[in-house]
Amino acid sequence: MSSQAAKLKKLLKTTIRDMARNKEQFTQSPGKDFTRNRKLDFASVISVLLSMSGGSTASSLMDYFKFDPATASTSAFVQQRAKLKPDAMEYLFRRFAQESPAKKTFHGYRLLAVDGSDLQIFADPNDEESYYPGTNGQHPYSLLHLNALYDLENQIYTDALIQKSRLLNEHKALTEMIDRSAVEFAILLADRGYEGYNNMAHLQEKGWKYLIRIKNGSRCMFSGFDLPKADEFDLSVALSLTRRQTKDVKALCSADPNHYRWIPSTMTFDFLPSGNRKHDPLAFYKISFRIVRFRLSADSFETIVTNLPADAFPPIELKRLYARRWGIETSFRQLKYTLGLIHFHAKKVEHIYQEIFAKLTMYNFSELITSPVVIQKRCAKYSYSVNFSAAVHICRNFFLGNVSPPMLEALLSRLILPVRPGRSNARKLVQRPPFSFLYRVA
Image: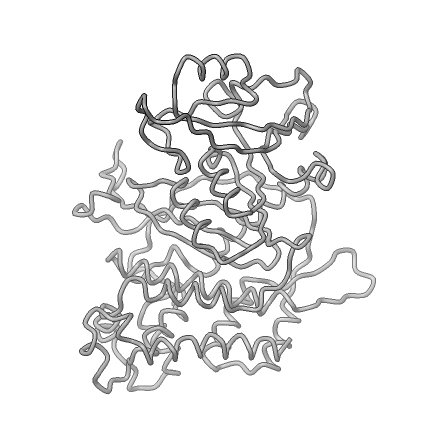
């Protein structure tokens, strides 16, 4: 395990050094920024951003410089980080995720979950794309939305895309992350809100499998199909989609809704012509999937669409597989409250972007180090896992050089928690404002 941790640290440090050698690609003023000899050079600024905790910027700088009286000032750091392009930390995150030794698969597939989470930041009235004035006595605020792909087997983020709240489009974010992914074989798990023929078509073109929960109602994918009357069913569908609305097409869609579907021009679909002129040839896009409805409890059911084969993935297996999607929800909680994604050290949106991708990178670094740790307890009632909250603090100091690999393994093996399966708690939907710079933990 210690050798694995050393390799991960070397990979992250090597990536930072490679970026430093080509810093012109990542600076606002190439040939000018980071050319003078300063305490906070390019690599140091990147490393400080990665190692930031929930405390103040000054405390993070003291940790990085090991409490040297000549530690760089907060003002100097703010000036230096402003020289980075907004996508510098995003590049580091993606490259580290791609090159990290994430080898675990599920039946030969990378098991990916997609979801999004809101991040409340300091209110900026000049940014109309993220600003909300507040109502009923509520303070004004600005909001960003983090879209992410999460590898459930390896417990790391593979991709992420940030949108300002008023420009939020989770479907667009998903198709962009699908199209640019280097993963060849994957199963995507998605909750309600991601249902849509365009998303399914992008997944089909990519060659990925998917399992998407869909809504029940009159205005959703579920409506319009000729479905079995049973409470539970598994129906295979082969649809031909078209944008043309001729009399023949209307007759086909009405007579055989399980095989023909009309896509209105107002609906995004990237694989059919957007126009609908009379002289255009009749074009169809074919897509095949299953609609599966299974029981959750005595009086509740869930409906999903999937292109997984029925022989290898019967409804009972799909139910178990979809339950694993909750892993991305748990990761968001750890990202926000363990790594401190709610404790931003900046007010400018471009600087907040730096911190978001820095936290995603450190999350991956900590998970890849922590997950191989084997906990063995004889005659124990529960199995045990590493306390991730403590592990993040240890891994951060390991990155800074304050903890050696042997010490790292010994500490992680001692800081453990029992795994109690079957526990569940109601989700608490409480908005938490950004923490003021004056009220930070030490």
